[in-house]
Amino acid sequence: MAEHTRSSITVDAAPAEVMGVIADFARYPEWTGEVKEAEVLSADADGRAERVRLLLDAGAIRDEHTLAYTWHSAHEVSWSLVTSQMLRALDGSYRLAPAGPDRTEVTYQLTVDVKIPMLGMIKRKAEKVIIDRALEGLKQRVESGAGRADQG
Image (cartoon, rainbow, N blue to C red; front, side, top):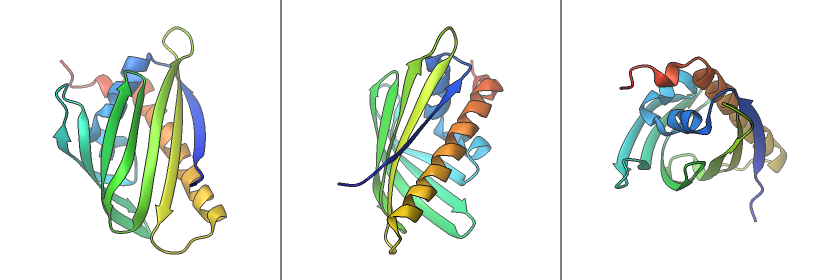
């Protein structure tokens, strides 16, 4: 069974606002760092992304992959890898939990498996870096109010 890495952060915003930023894939290049392009390939009846193509450029690693998203509730979304050049697996989730008035605890879980041989310890460290950057970027994006810009 594949091991996963998990981390959490508290964001000063309501869960709906946090999930709004998570679900706005077109704006990922504005705050995620490594994501240079994001394109929703298909959406469900509620307009939520089901398949998303992402172009990543993290220096030595450049990859284009497609992820399938499952929206479990207003507070949880997960994804799994459909296609990739470099990855065998990229499975993850965001779980949101209210942590007081206008505060949300965001838990990000991630499992990555690359096609090239890599020590498990190095994989876990890479997962931790990806998660920490994503959570910090999400927190900054939501708390700056940028996720609300141009809405309406």
